[in-house]
Image 1 (spheres, rainbow, N blue to C red):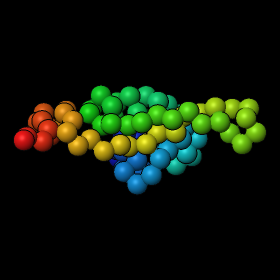
Image 2 (cartoon, rainbow, N blue to C red):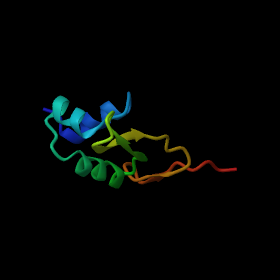
Image 3 (cartoon, rainbow, N blue to C red):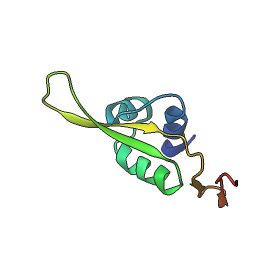
Image 4 (cartoon, one colour):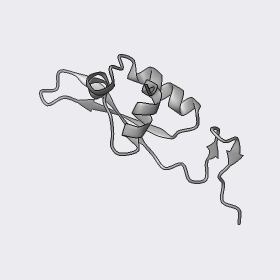
Length: 83
């Protein structure tokens, strides 16, 4: 069975994710913790705070951003463009 972090990363490579989606799809109660782990691994993930339709609740929506020219901790190699 794949780890939640791997499942969430695969999801982020296709589209955004919210905590309720992570719970329903992957049984993940702490999406913020998994996002922290992915960021620590070098992934560039953007957090956007969203308000629901009636304005009573706020929640995070996470999106995987391109990492061109950034340091890739997963392979310990620089991915910077050399001029």
